[in-house]
Image (cartoon, rainbow over all chains, first blue to last red; front, side, top):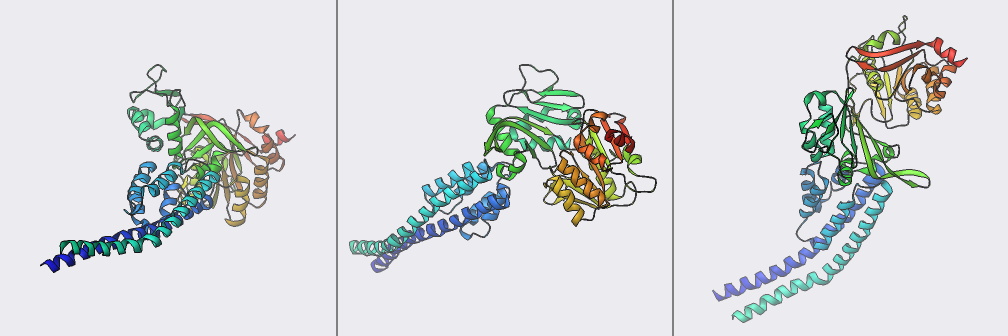
Length: 164
Length: 318
C-alpha cells in the first residue's frame, strides 16, 4: 500500500512539473499565433479595407490556438465591438498571462477608431510588443520547462522519502 | 418606416430607445434625422420638423425637455455608423459623408484634420445628418413620356432640382424600370454609384435596385466609372447622381458619343440656374442632353416639375 502511495505521489509531482512546463510551451504557441493574427489584421485593415468585425474573424480564421477567441468574438453582438472583444480576450487559453491580455485590450480599445495609417501604426506597435513577449516567453520556456519537470520529479522523490 | 428604424438601430441602443416613442406616421414619412452635439435631435418628415424628447417621444416645439446628444454620445453614434471601422470609411469621410447600410447617407460635420493640406479625417464630430434612402416604385412613371422618343430611343436627360426634392429617388426608380423592362423593352443599365446611394450595394447585392439588367459600379469616381462602364459593361443607358465637375461632364460626352444615353441629376435652385451651370453648358455645347427636367418637389399628387428640351439648351449655349 505504501509503495502504491509513493508511486502516486511521485507521479503526481512529476505530472505537475510536466504540466507547468507544457503551460510555458503552450503560451509560446499562442503568442506566436497572436503575432500572426496581428499581422493579418493589419493587412486586412490597411490593404483590404475590410470592416473590423470581418477583419478580426478573417485574421483569426486559421489560427488553431485562437479558436476560442474567434468563436467567442463571432458569437458576440455585431453592434457591441468592445464587449465582444473583451469576451474574446477572456476566452484565450489559461496559459496566457495578465500582460498578454493587457496587450490585446490595448489593441482592442483603439481598433477601428482612426484612419488607415493610424490603424497600421497601432497594429505595428502591438505587433512589436507581441513579438517581444513571444521572444521572452520562448526563452523562458527553454529555460524553465525542463527545470519544472525536474522539480516535479525531484519533489515527488522527496515527498516519497518523507512518506517512507 | 423600416428605413427609419434601420437607421436608428445603427445609431445604437440609446438612440433606439429615444426614438421608440416616435409615432408610426412620422417614421413612415421621415426623410432626415439630424444629430447635433449639445443641441436638439430632430426628424424632418414631410414639411414638418419633430424634436426628440428626453423621455423618448417627439414634439413639434423645441423646449427644455428636448434631447440633446452629448459629445460622447455623438462619438459613439459616429463609431457605430462607421461599423466600428472608421478606416474603412476614410475615402467617404474626407468628402464629408458616410454611406450607411441600406444606402442612407450620413453627412458629417466636425473639425477637419488636415495632412499635407488634404483632409484626412474628422475630429470632434459636431453634426450627423442622415438622409433616409427610400425606394419608391413608380416614382419615375410621370417622367416616362419625356424619356422615350417616338422612335423608341431613350433620351439623355438631366434632372435638376434643389437638395431633397427627390431627384435620386426618381433616377433610382428609372434605373429600376429600364433594367426590368417596366417602361419598354429591357435595356442594359449601368449605374455609376459613387456614393452608394442609388443602389445601396451591400456584399455585392444592390439593395435598392431590383432591375435584372442593372449593373452597378460603386464607390468609383463618376468620371472614371462612366468610362469604365462604356468600355466594359456595354450599357444602353448610364445613370448617375449629382453631376458636379467638368471632368464628369467630359466623361458623359464620351459616353454619348459611344451610343449610350445618359441620365443624371444636378443641384440647382431653378430651371435657369441649372442652365447656367458650367458642366451643363459644356454638355449642351456637345448636344449631350435632350431633356432637362427641373423637379421642384413633390406633394400628395406627385412630383411638381418643369421640362425643357434641346431648344432651351441651345438658347443657353447662345
